Every structure is written in C-alpha cells, then in structure tokens.
Length: 101
Image 1 (cartoon, rainbow, N blue to C red):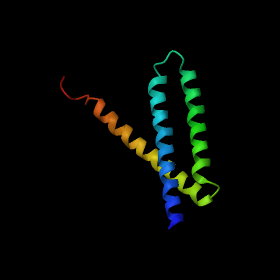
Image 2 (cartoon, rainbow, N blue to C red):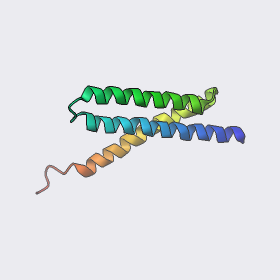
Image 3 (cartoon, rainbow, N blue to C red):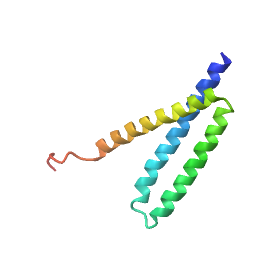
C-alpha cells in the first residue's frame, strides 16, 4: 500500500512538472515572439524550465526506477493535456473567417 501511494505521488509530481514545463513553454513563445530580445526570453526560459524539471525528477524519483517511470509518464500526460488546453483556447480566440463581422 505504501509503495502504491509513493507511485501515485510520483505520477502527480510528474504531471505537475509537465504542466509547469509545457505551459511555461507556451507562455514563453507567446511573450518571446513579440519581444525586443527574443533570444533572452527563449534561452532563460529553457534554462529555468529544464532546471526545475530535472530537480523535480530527482526529488520525486527518490532513486527508484519505478517512481522515475511514473514521473516521466505523468510528464508526458501533462504534455498532452497542455496541448489539448492550448488548442481549445486558440479555437475560442480565433474567429471563424467565414463569419460576418
């Protein structure tokens, strides 16, 4: 039972890390494209997101390959969730080109 709880916590940690990583990427792209210094935005965001993700993997895995696998699985689940949410948000923002003004 205790092992199951630690695996679920690793999964939740992976989902949290993934949401932070990929939502941060989405936010960076939206800000960086219109910025005067896009290289600074993209590079600093990449470094910050990578350090946070790797530190989180190290913390949540705790030296266990099973927990690391669950954490990585949660990370990829979060990737799919962020893609789904950002596509849904884009559909609501972009008007239909055939619709009358």
